[in-house]
Amino acid sequence: MTKAIVGIIGGSGVYALPGLTDMREERVATPWGEPSDALHFGRIGETEAVFLPRHGRGHKLSPSGINYRANIDALKRAGVTDIVSVSACGSFKQDLYPGLFVLVDQFVDRTFSRQSSFFGNGCVAHVSMAHPVAPLLRQRIAAAASAENIPFVSGGTYICMEGPQFSSLAESQGYKAAGYDVIGMTALPEAKLAREAEISYATIAMVTDFDCWHPEHDDVDVASVIKIVQANAGAAARLLARLLLDFPQEHEACPIGSDRALDNAVLTAPPARDPDLMKKLEAIMQRVDRS
Image (tube, rainbow, N blue to C red; front, side, top):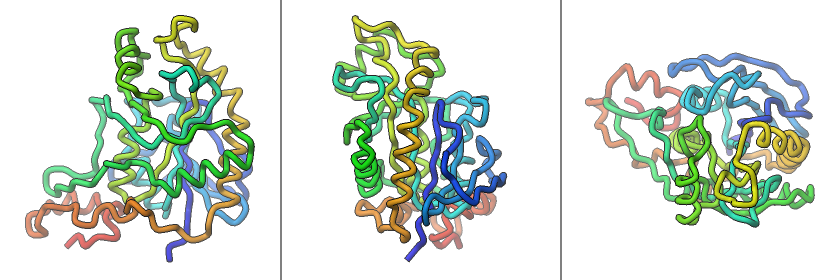
């Protein structure tokens, strides 16, 4: 069995993980460049945790400027088995109101200027993203939210836009008509890279606004987003603390195989693999024969 180590990626307004004991900071080098910030190692209860602020301290990185590959590679090198991502988002549904947490189970990718894979020419791999969220991990987050009486909805589709601008009215109305639930700027390519790294992944989408489709609410702006994020910071901290306190000591095998996603995914024959790329893939493919 593999010891469970939970990685927490904090989004807008979530720049620290309160309650971490035995905390230390370490900058982890990766072949993909610099992660967003130093990793914060510690524990809550008996569960080891690694916290990474997605935008860096001081929110210095835009959604399009984040080095997602470096972030996921660094967490993999730290031994993380499960990633819980916290992400601010807009809502396309009346009942998904600001302040509510949505435990999404699907993603739609509308980004266009980000590196979304560790693989490429020299080593080609295709992992399944049919079910991008690890179901056991999402269930554990739901149980923690219930235990802390934190309002949440389980399930939903998160559309990830490029940004950094918010949606136009036409875009917002189109996404709503398509049946999407929430919109954000950061869950992708994060979820895709976590799958390639064989790390179970789940997102807590914190609703901050109604985007701009709602005729009875003001258009979204940074001030309104941060106001809701700050109001929910305590709830997010309680949810994460409860999740870690109740987390199993051993990593649970993922029923959809997210922790074995590279099985039968690599197409490039060993003699044709690019040595330089294979060296960069050392952490990502540590379970797979790279010869």
